[in-house]
Length: 310
Image (cartoon, rainbow, N blue to C red; front, side, top):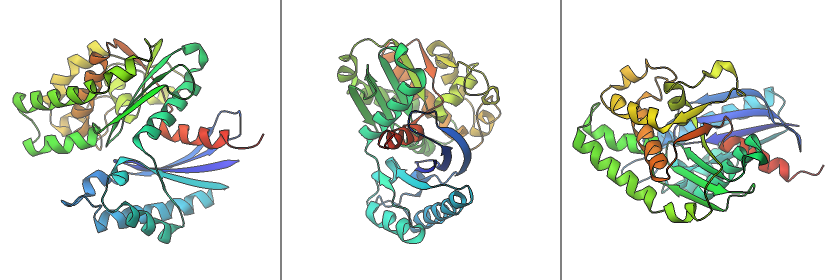
């Protein structure tokens, strides 16, 4: 069957069309996305702005037309932190449903972590043993650990690369050392608050990182380019990342966009993302992680396929 999944994230809204069958590898057919940056569409009272809601509704409607043209038999959609944390979540969801017919499912942070963990487990397989998952989006950071397909422990923290970048932007393109030190302290305090339940699961046999931010950081630190395909092993070493953090801090977004693997749209967020991932790796004593090409969207698809009759 051909499935379509609309992923409404804090940075992008992404339609992924795949050919999927129970027990089989979901094969990508088509991708359609836009940098909507819903997290930046929040008004001072915590609601998604009318303009942001209208743009989301229009794009989801466009996705339904694309899905129809690609022969999608089932179209699903989910939303993460930007919609989840807005004060007008129900109103935005109703506007999308009314304009497009799509009922977006709002995922909790824990569900994000569990679905992404499932995707990483299926990608790397049982031979990887106990996994520790690190996933960072625009609005939140998800962690998961366990030996099975369902993580034994998960955590979701408001440490997304987009969210923290908005905080840094009040200091301009080049925050001072004091500003960065204060942010670094807060990042580490938040992560430390969930350290114990994650490590109680046991020492991981494999540490996995997912998300566009981690893939970009991996490329920056020497991992193979995307053009080499998804099956090329890619890693991110903490030592390399630690070397790059002060360099990224000294650069403007325009300068970062000229670096390998960093797009113009993601460039402003790379410093905050790097600071968060470096902090996770240091606090959990991770020297190197393996980069997984599958993430939340694939986990959502896999869970849907698990519910089908063979």
